Length: 192
Ligand code: G4P
Image (cartoon, rainbow, N blue to C red; front, side, top):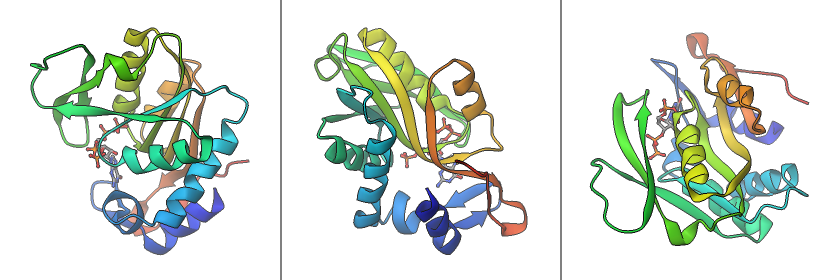
């Protein structure tokens, strides 16, 4: 999505440790009109896939899921993150390791919001090491639903999450793929 690449070029900052700061429109402040454009692009990419529901994980995934859900006229659900494994009630849950933060958390979704047999589109803001999307895939598996694909705003192509997920056969669409951020210069992978 050229508009996203341009936005990242204009507003993104490459921080030490290969972290891309996009707080001005995605991670803290939200550019609402632009977010809705992202949602429409995700809806276009998954048109005809029979998506019943969108699933993401809090916090930053929620805005993108909302935008995609609004464009597709489908509900979106977000997994909650808990630090401990003690979650009461009828839930699906799995442990996810965050490589960026170096910690583990429980990803939790109430069973009532993920019906058996539904076709689910996974959405997130970043795809780095892929642990978050793998956690969402595990939740979908537990629910007996079907993951039809994943859509992320920004993939860090120099980390291995995208390649590993695509290797499982699932469709992964990244609206912008950052190939490198050396010396603060952000380069993107060419996409069709
Ligand atoms: P994964 O998301 O692919 O599993 O990778 P990882 O565990 O490494 O990422 C952990 C968190 O760090 C995620 O957010 C992810 O979105 C975020 N992240 C990874 N790389 C970058 C980056 O270059 N820039 C920014 N801005 N974020 C990055 P999170 O901790 O779950 O945060 P949030 O969704 O609550 O905001």
